[in-house]
Length: 179
Image (cartoon, rainbow, N blue to C red; front, side, top):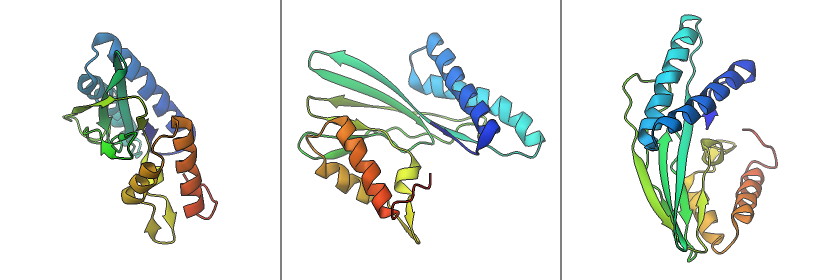
């Protein structure tokens, strides 16, 4: 996940988000409900922050893995985060269809979940908008460029894919990490 802001205030909201989501998973394993509960907890805190003139929000992706023989089913829910991508062993890149609003912005928010089955050789990629919104002048790195890169990483291990994404974004930004 990610929170708006920097410093102690952002760290406090990160901690609240992590522990609220963990507490929600004790009650139910349904990711959309977990994200709704997190949204409620953040809204309560943000009401206090807004009264002090601070406007904040958070994003998060909740993931659950279920194994079945040689394959793994990934269940995913999103609160304002880009949806996860699956890089298939053949280079196909697929989106795990789960989208939801920013966390802590709307009182009545609806979250959805999506599933993807991973086979041997497939890689699940979670990323933030810091990747797709990386800039070189006025040009953004963008989702199309990310998908092209991921397709070229077919057959690589997850750590190799992560390294390739990091290197490509840094190169795109002329070696300067900005987010």
